[in-house]
Image (tube, rainbow, N blue to C red):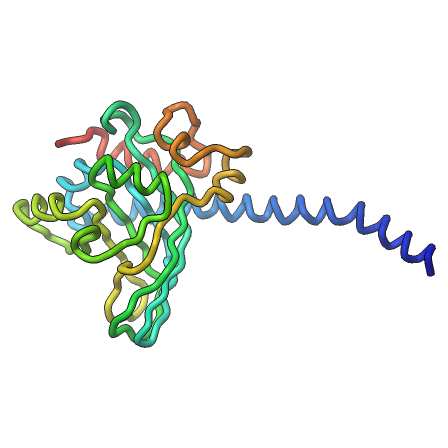
Amino acid sequence: MRKLSSFLSSILMVVLPFLAEVANASDKTKDDDRLRNCGSVLKEILDVPDNIPQGLLDKADCVVVFPSVLKAAFIIGGSYGRGAMSCRKGENFRGPWGAPTMMALEGGSFGFQIGGQATDFVLLVMNESGARGILASKVKLGGDASVAAGPVGRDSSAETDATLRSEILSYSRARGLFAGVSLEGSTIRPDNGDNRRVYGKEIPAREIVLSGTVAVPPAAEQLISTLDAKTPKHRT
């Protein structure tokens, strides 16, 4: 019995590291797929001229993309999503778009919500304090004071008002039926575990996004090239 136990222990010592490597490789593939999905979703949304006003996009310091956010609710809402955030590099966010940090969206809201759906979200971070706040810690998405839902066809005066009132503007593309699509009550934060797998080592989200020294991973090339093509210059 003792020999059998010793034999099984030896097998586990050999097999467990292999299984851990397989699991890590699988997670890395999921992270890469997520970055590719972020690029595809952003390109599809920005290729429709009236989806997000160009004036707001040009003023944004950072863009966060959450593809296929899952929301399911009856009276009490809930949301879960994983995505990526890129910011303009350089002083005062005036340079080209940089390497993305992986992001997590979690939480829920109270309200009249019936149904379930997967929704693509694009968040525009409109100023430096909003960007640095997100990179530093978990940020809760609230009402009009911090997040404004972005309707299609907003006129120029409304654009100015939205920018003044909000640090983060949210735009959504719904798949399926849902009453009351909203991120209110959810939180967003950098996903350090995903960043570690994507970049192969522990790098703080702030350094990834703002240092300008971190290379864009291959899976994020479409995301960054789309931003560079659609809004190459920051406009005040």
